[in-house]
Image (cartoon, rainbow, N blue to C red):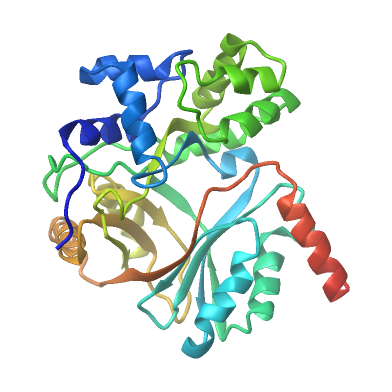
Length: 350
């Protein structure tokens, strides 16, 4: 049985930093006041949890709103080759999440490529599939976003059927995608995607790096939020270290004419962190994907059962990650992807 090593204040801190870190010069002071502690104590606790319960503290951008092409991809690979071939996919800098899951499609990963990618998304996936000798590979892009945003119930306050309105919608994404990025925006993005330092004024160094005052940097950051290109600035937790040792990808076969209605209904559950409409294939009939995190598989199943009971959709399966091959964040507008593409193009004569 897992031992919970987090005390009540740790959980309060995790709750506030994963919700939103304010874009102000002294954010830790503001958050400390919100939960009734001191900045010094908060920084001390955060330093203790960084690298364990806390994976990263930085801007969370909408990949598509920055002009990137992205998708979830499912691959079927011979089981005895899976570990070896997962390494082939992991070499691509735009693959951020890569898991073994309990299905014939046994490797699932997310990939993003920049607007000026040499290959584009589909060709990149095709190349990777050939390099990894896959038996089958399916690109499953988001056709419609119903919900995105992890908010783990670290304080154990919510019931499995608790509801929470999404703070980022398909309409917001579409509006954000229509706004071009300036060179100044990209400079700000390059800084804000870095880990936030544990200092009283953590944004000062980033501002200095790009020749801005701290107020100018924060004003630009707030504009990115207003436009929907940045969803929020917050912590990303290490789910397992924070006590959430199971993640279940509940996939549902929903009649096409009901997909919008049911997708919004499924996305309204607080415990659902991601809810998307995706394409189907002859060998993949499931069109709505709901990601849930639980302290164990039973908790995940209870959440998905509550969704089933409310929506009446019973044709579903749950894919659990049984091995994590890679989990990181997209690094926007950095050279690594271009270097990978150039090396592959030369090696394959493309």
